[in-house]
Amino acid sequence: MKQVLSGLPLIDTLEISDDALAEIALILEMRCNFSISIYKDKCMKRRIAIRMRSCRCLDPAAYCNLLRQNTQELELLKKTLTIHVSQFFRNPSMFEKLQTTIFPFLFQKAEADRTPLKICSLGCAGGEEAHSLGIILREHFAKELLRTPVEIRAFDIDADILQAAIQAEYNEDRLKDLPDSLRARYFSPSGSRLKLSPDIRELVTFHQRNIMDADTFEPCQLALCRNTLIYFTRPDQEKILRGISHILPTGGILVLGKSETLVGEVRRLFSTVCPVERIYRKL
Ligand SMILES: C[S@@+](CC[C@H](N)C(=O)[O-])C[C@H]1O[C@@H](n2cnc3c(N)ncnc32)[C@H](O)[C@@H]1O
Image: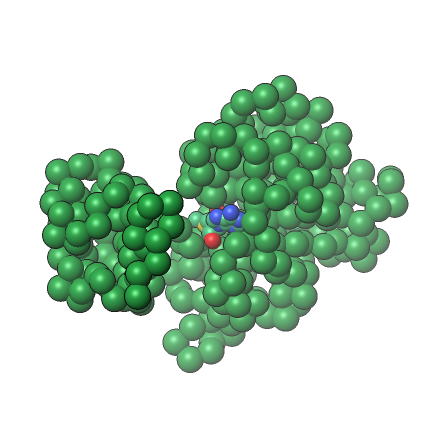
């Protein structure tokens, strides 16, 4: 059944046939060397339908033609299909910077102020980022954890991915940047997957929230919003960044993804701690 929203029919997943999906998969493989074969067909069809609707191209054959001719649309489709992609210690140099510079500073301040250390991961996908922070804390800040309570709160809009995050069972590819010693210490086999140990999981809580409402989230001293802003329009990026600045105190730290930056008025509210790792301090 079709519904109508803003004058455009909503495409349901049934309207993209298996043949059309196979054709789109082939175009993605040939032109981007990107395989969607590991993902569920139903999920892929739903996301392709989102793109088709966005570019007002409602016929799968016409959409295939568009993909063949328009590299920008090809890139946008790829982004839409990979939106949950994450990894433990994604961009390892950023996690190293957190470990060597940012966490010592934040613990010192939290101890001096006698406050818990609160951390937010916004757009957390399957929890890889939030759990990586937990691993750093257990590995390098065991003494500090005894003195200062730490809460890592992770937010995503997608209920399914949050269930996966709570489950904390990962495929091998999510762990490719994780040193063997850490993998051995914090993961155990669960069928063909790897299950994260409870001492890391207990540091993180997951919440279904829209980061467009970030200004209503609980305050924190460290906010990570990586590889998520890229999916938003410029005005919405500004709104999200304003929201995050609202929940950070003076001296609070914001980390963005490698291809993201501060935009709009909010730039005046932060100083740059590390331009390479996109780390900023609230003024
Ligand atoms: C590519 S993942 C980024 C994961 C992680 N931050 C990283 O850098 O590896 C983007 C995540 O943002 C989530 N997301 C998209 N729009 C959102 C919104 N409005 N509110 C909360 N999460 C959102 C998606 O569901 C997805 O899990």
